[in-house]
Length: 213
Figure 1 (cartoon, rainbow, N blue to C red):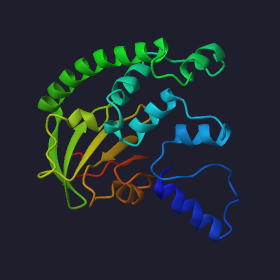
Figure 2 (cartoon, rainbow, N blue to C red; figure 1 turned 90 degrees about the horizontal axis):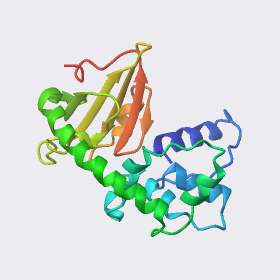
Figure 3 (cartoon, one colour; figure 1 turned 90 degrees about the vertical axis):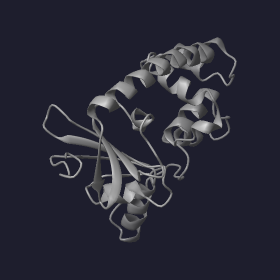
């Protein structure tokens, strides 16, 4: 569902550099939802999968439960062969106890996370110019663009960058934007990554100097 990946696939197919890969490809729909539609084309997408899909494509306004369910799910890791657990989660009922308990836990997590993010930005966030765009940056693992909620100003900033170094010495950089005129996926592609117009990721041995300022 990444437009940069779909473009690369189509280019490889045109030049006979790869075989046909079966699947459902569609920009604007998350991978979890596309996989469900591919495997179960005649079965309605479960409410739980739909919520996770909305979060992934950043359609948080689709439901007030999108963010809480996403963060609540982080508490409930399930093994792939936990058929009973997945069956409860995939029950297509938004009022099921399973789904509502996860949403309730997620709301508590968000309250704490938002307060923590505000403190993190006070300590670590900085502004720079990256690829000629005004960019908010933070050196922090395991967080996304919501870390900047207390600072982001669409009239002042063009994009956001969250970066950190892994144990193997490589860097992970995630770029985000709410500016329709900025395509961060194309920017990431220049550094060997890719993704959406509004969100993408890059992994490599070098960190762009302007981001590490």
